[in-house]
Image 1 (cartoon, rainbow, N blue to C red):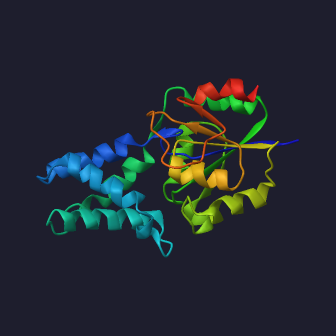
Image 2: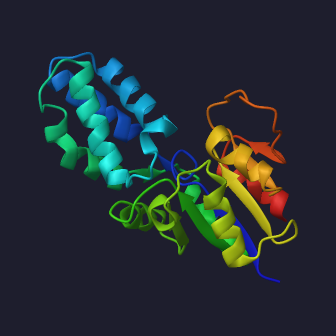
Length: 218
């Protein structure tokens, strides 16, 4: 029986902090509070109302920078850094334990599948940084962003997941844990920053780092 592990990418496998640090750095360069710019960028990115009807992540990011210009009373300043922000997203690095752990998952004969709220122009470099083969599904492939169940149903239907052959692994509680729970998927919450659950769903397992999953699978 083929066994599957599905993953979120950002903050589960790759540390997205450097992207947000880049936005803060740009803010300081433009003479505004970098911390505030960082927080507003994240808030816009996480607001699902900014994604409907479906919008490619590249355009969502550009709109985010335009929104920062509006919020800080600037004209075409943050937006001019669009290329640099996109490059920062392509250049994210994995957490220290990730590559070795992914290799161990493969040695246990799991097929690795990435489900990411990303785009075709970004995800190849992100996957390359992980150094192991993945099947990749992005929001651009399914024209839906997690936690939209359409994303999860598309992937489940493609592979034929069931409770015996599949586990979903992710850091995002609202974006991944709750919808995966609604799909009756077994889950592992990679709670790196010791967040509190914001809903009623209780993940099947909870860990603080990816390598803590290995005993669960053996």
